[in-house]
Image 1 (tube, helix red, strand yellow):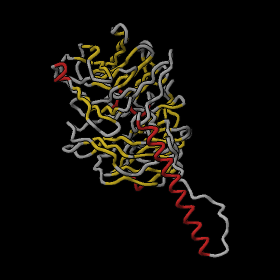
Image 2 (image 1 turned 180 degrees about the horizontal axis):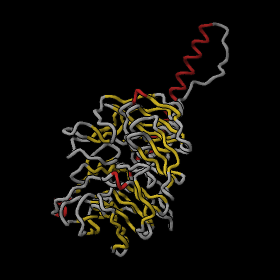
Image 3 (image 1 turned 120 degrees about the vertical axis):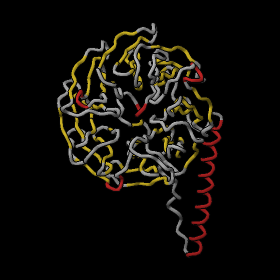
Length: 418
């Protein structure tokens, strides 16, 4: 991946005795510098032409566990993408045609394909140019009136989808990531909401209604189920602990043992989140009406609380020492250890969930994508005129490009920014 350093004209020119000779020398050097730069770019393009415009992910070595592809860059949901800052041209590389219902999913990238859930089903596009490859929905493929409204999980060439239905229809389906063919499906006696699954060892864990269910991926049999009494919201996995909130604030957050489904603790005194809860260094970070709380994962105890940023209403991003998020006061950065405010950019009051690449934060704010210096909070640049609904428009970063859903409900698209 190229860095953001631009080629500069060579220095140390021989000093001419006359001003006109110096000008001519400068023109010649600049001319050959431009030629050299063009040759390098042409060489790189030719070298990559046989493999497409996006690099393939690294191959998995024999005996190595496949890397899961999941929303917010991993099971810890930190939004921290392991890539350097983007050398972007600030333009739309491509956008899809109008999709179905406005989804609340994140774009997932795998094998140069983009996977996105639009409320009715799963849509798959070429990451290179946005060509629509195939669509999967429960009505056409299984003759079931279910909805796919949450993020898929891609693991070991397989897509796992949790399905929402008011009936006893399929709760979880496994698809071939290449063509969408059904590999297997799991019907449940439980009805209600569904949330994105996670992988724990050889089990896949997902939710349906008020239940969290763990199932052995080889035998396709339940290992355990946990009843939270209220509809379960987004799942976060930290080591052996599964974290989630419910749609009833009085029940608060839950921490359960991922190996057996036993409750470790739950409570509402330190807040509850309807979003993915990011975790780092044994703590989870919860956005509240009053601000941000850091909570110890093992005990559920409050580590610190920061009320100076206002209602923190987006998913957070976390790097080694900082928590980033959006609130009614603007885009903010907090010290991860203490909760102290490092900066607030009040101009980005409508910023969506930030994503990190290198030293830059990327956020979807009103009608634009904005790049922000993560150390200072200053805006680096933006791409305007995209018509985003902010707050839940989360950016995915892959191969020097940004992928983000947005637009009006009647004209909802998936955008690729380069």
